[in-house]
Image (cartoon, rainbow, N blue to C red):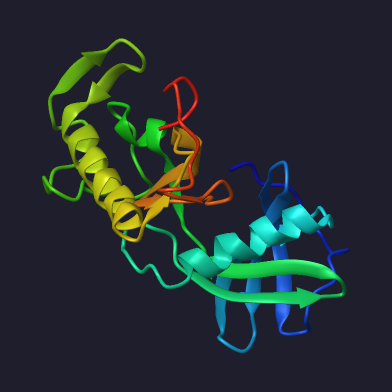
Length: 200
């Protein structure tokens, strides 16, 4: 996500201190905040739209994901409304995009090993990929396995992500894959048929 200067104009409970804006989408923005009560940094997603349908979707995103705990899904914490603004907190994930992670030679600050190999980036063999160029095969294999496990946890709970793309998947320095952004979440039985062109 792109980083912008701190947004001091955001009205929040006094225990939350905005550190910086991490990104924004069609329905809301995400901030890094410090929670004084929990004494830790968390991510805060705030809904910008106030129409009834947007509020319903936002609250549904939280309530249907809050009880699904899996290491490859971002963990949600608290849903609240303050000064007529709906927000929820979640784990602050430090990582890089899926595409950056699988590029050969890409190094984290400490050149962390991948989850399954124990080898530094660049030590594994590479393979050609039409869509991405050359990729690190070891990292790609590990990342795809974890991605499938996270999505599988959603499916076992009867949910479809419906917006799965590299931008919504981060990889931590230790190689852990984390799926983000569940704004288009749907029940498996309620999801409309797809032609496969826009959804995964």
